Length: 462
Image (tube, rainbow, N blue to C red; front, side, top):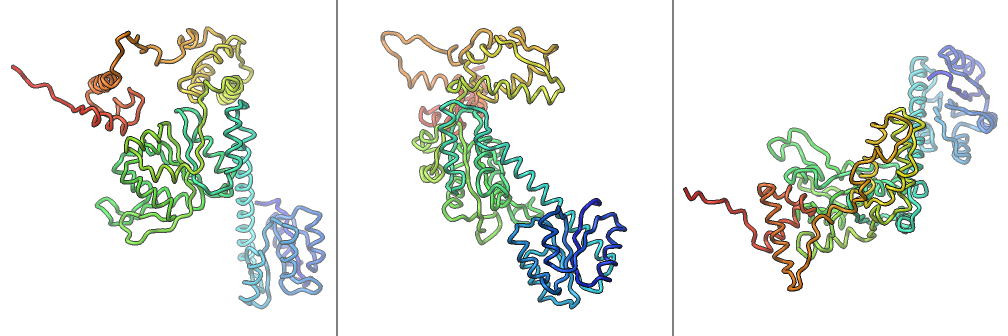
């Protein structure tokens, strides 16, 4: 906290000497001025961390100085001093941008305490500004990795809507970077100084999801021993990212719809709704239009969410971006594990570009993470790659392609049989069977109802 520069402005010479001595004794560098005009000149030419100024002075008083500081966008801290103990003058000074005030005669301990508090606050402001600039830079669309035409189209859309408060629906396969894009939208929006809150709708048990989203009041149910703020409250003024929105139960879809329409939430246990100011960005790897058709997703919510629909292309449609991503991830993990200087053999990138990447960017990143950890030398070669990449395996789906006979095939019966096999394989666990079929649990339940599939326990014939 020491080595900070303080500008002391007061027309009373003896007062300046006493305060200067007390501050220098504490290790601060002090510059003095006997009126606001001189002080303003000093501020224009030197870096000043804190200004302590009297309110009543000749030529330019403290209030006039504060007005001038606003005009030059001074971003330091100001403490005003008044001999009159006037609340009115102190309030006016605070309105004009002062951060604190102190009255004459000045108590040394009170002065030093206020100075230390003000400088800590200044450091906090600088840290927050630096963090915001870092995040804005980290998630700037121009800096995001990928130059393919498919990705450029996405960035062009997003750059136009980032500062508009419309809801956004991001659709794309797992691992395509939907959350990264949502962060980029938030940190390039006018809400970038407020929270970015992530909710994975598929990872929270259904019976807990409502309280996680909207919170609850103490005593609203047996275990509600304290008030709990929900995710929407936590995101106040900022953005809430609802990932895997397709997994949201129908009864909660109604509540999300109301929040979108009325900017209100119903907290469990409260009689009156609460106003919230939150932008909603949703994401899914499912075909929401299909779920709407299957009555598994509300059509009114779908249209509310997809005011701005964005489709993220899979990595196989961005082959030109694969070398860029591969190099970026290599640099990232090389620094993380202290293996600077590590590089790829030329053949490795060729293999990467031929592979189908069913897990998209996440699969590529995880693979490079593993390669860097296990690499013994400075070169990652083809011999270090897993078998499926070397074999040029395009997709697991190709393993299951069936020949179609000339007589044709009953697709519905085939789909029903695959569903039944998946359920049997997973002991009729719907969640696991849905994962095996790469569909949502809601889609599986809909298909089971559609084909009349029920869990039948084998009867004991003995």
